[in-house]
Amino acid sequence: ATLTVDAHQPGAAINPAMWGVFFEDINFAADGGLWAELVKNRSFEFPHRLQGWFEVRRKNARGTLTIHEDSPAIPENPHYLRITSQAPGEGYGVGNEGFRGMGIRAGEGLRFSFWARRGPDASVALRVALRGAENRLLTEGSIQVDKTAWTPYSLTLNPTLTDPGSRLELTLEHPGQVDLDAVSLMPTTATHGFRPDLMGLLRDLKPGFVRFPGGCVVEGHDLANRYQWKRTLGPADARRPMPNRWLDNMAGEGRFAPDYQQSFQLGFFEFFQLCADLGAEPLPVLSCGMACQFESGEMVPAESLDPFIQDALDLIEFANGAPDSPWGKVRAHMGHAAPFGLKFLAVGNEQWGPEYLDRFQRFEKAIRARYPQIQIIGSSGPWSGGADFDTLWAGMRELRADLVDEHYYAPPGWFLANAHRYDHYPRSGPKVFAGEYAAHPERPAPGTPRPNTWEAAMAEAAFMTGLERNADVVRLASYAPLLANVDAWQWSPNLIWFDSLQAAPTPSYWVQQTFSRNRASRILPVQLAIPPSATATAALYASAAVDDATGEVVLKVVNAARRPADLDLRIQGVQGLGGTARKTVLSAGLADENSLGAPPKATPVTSDVSVPGPAFSQTFPPYSLTVLRLSMK
Ligand code: AHR
Image (cartoon, rainbow, N blue to C red):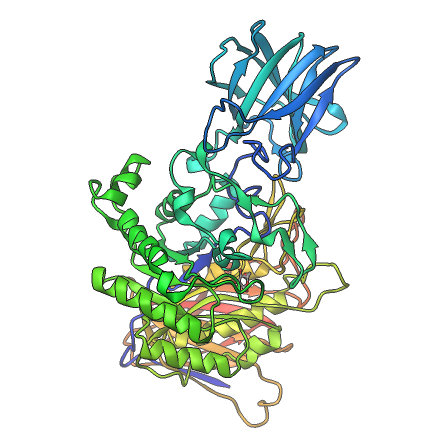
């Protein structure tokens, strides 16, 4: 077979931010995930006020744990815990289980903080301990609570042992009473609150953008449960938690997590900060006044949509406004005087129907009038491929959306079959944002997660060559979902699985990373010529682009067949191509997965190959993604 790249006339510019990530608080991706806080229900505001907490009673200890809300420390989150110890034995108090156990590392410092006031009788010594398996003490400290008025306290703990399933214990060693609220335990290694190993993996992806705060969480089960960005600003202790929409995923996986709340400690300010830390474009999604149409389908009447539209306008000011503008001031006050440089705004998640088009139009008009430079993203509905999809697209064209968000979760075969999906999309009108996609293999057994196999990742890679070949139409793309806690997941597959201490980037992660780190500037047309004798067995997918910064031709080839593919490569229209090329190959068995604590089976391997000139041969291994960066001699 022959692969010809026409480099005479580079085509359209590829969006430098094209490969991004989609963050949603699903699978404990925020609390218990990227957000490094270890204490669950830290403000005693979960519907079951003591959820995540348990009584600690050491040797003959006696006392009570009670919840109160009179004269609170934080009026917005009024409930607090009172520990009354009558006969402390070896300690009476309370423990916190964390998010399916706290991951504690020897040598990693922890900042423990809380609000407290003592009872009327005497000052109390609060013992703070971290314990692991078999009750092993990992570290401890003590704080004297000596004021009867609410006061913030803090202490640094230095664990000497590692344990993935630790718990926090707060006990009194003498009779007495103490009120506690806003309890926090944060690793000192967490910059801006983000868990360092997960942040490292995100950084390595070099994402062009971050879509946040999610898909269904934006819409909510009902409107009361929708994501409201203004509720996530200001002092962290004063943010009111809310039930996470993924607390039960009956439709998808049939899994329950009754303790799943959104604490909003990772709120909109932190999302913008995350984007700044990653060097990624922020891409927020806002409620358009429609709750999830698969659930309650509740809608605010179109005539009452103004507060929702105002939220969008205020968000743009929050992100981009001068530090003395009303919302820019809020941002500056939270610690970021410089604007965040917001360019995109998505109106609604997977919405559909005439009600959506009506609402989109109202948003579009208001945003365009005030902020004409903002690119507005509309929805193409949930993945169905049916008539509704076409109707929505037609509506989006008419209503001048800048981009339309398409979502696809389908078997690997669909991704292979759709690698040419965008070859014939109209070149005018709204561009495509492939905002959620993932190849979904079958589950090995009911109740188990769909596996993140190499077959799925390879199919995504084949599809992504199609996205890149059509980068004039497809401007942004992100796999979904991004993160999943192995002990608390509601959806599968996901890009990165983690537990309390470790993370396992999946084969799909390495595909995303390989595309993202081999981005180039302008598309080059590619042509695959497969001889009739090989058409039945060949499964080749390719894209090419030129990197203006280095002058390299960047070629991506997927061989989805079970035999190696020998290709004659012809790079036409470039002078002096040859010498040494950088080659990155990912290949594995179709069923291979990367798992926590095991050596990864599918990761990129990079080497140098010698290229004699613009015409040369290469063998592409079975079931592989290969990137060749071809330079000038
Ligand atoms: O990615 C998981 C969910 O899939 C998203 O929340 C939603 O947009 C889609 O249905």
